Length: 97
Image (cartoon, rainbow, N blue to C red; front, side, top):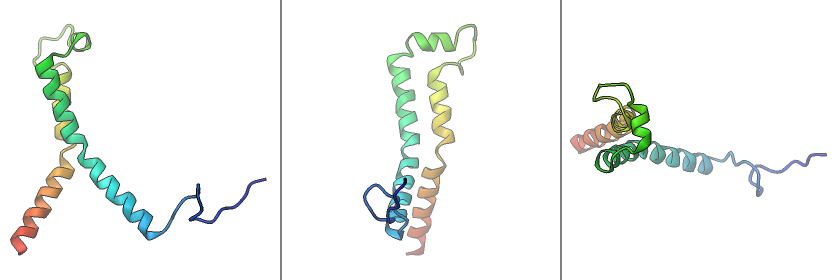
């Protein structure tokens, strides 16, 4: 048989406003982590070299856009929307005051 637990019991899901607000705050900061992470990975790939896997990814291609470094830069650019929103919201807040 299964046992029913109240929403705030240990091991149960919490549906209160405080828990939801905390989850949204964590999600907001987590989405901001992608862009710098990919930028650092691109920088490290460029400085330290891609290693053997970079050669596999770019084998047979003469384009400078192949390899792991450019891929990380593209991923960084595609994940930059949360940063742009944060910058624009702070800029508009500064103009209001």
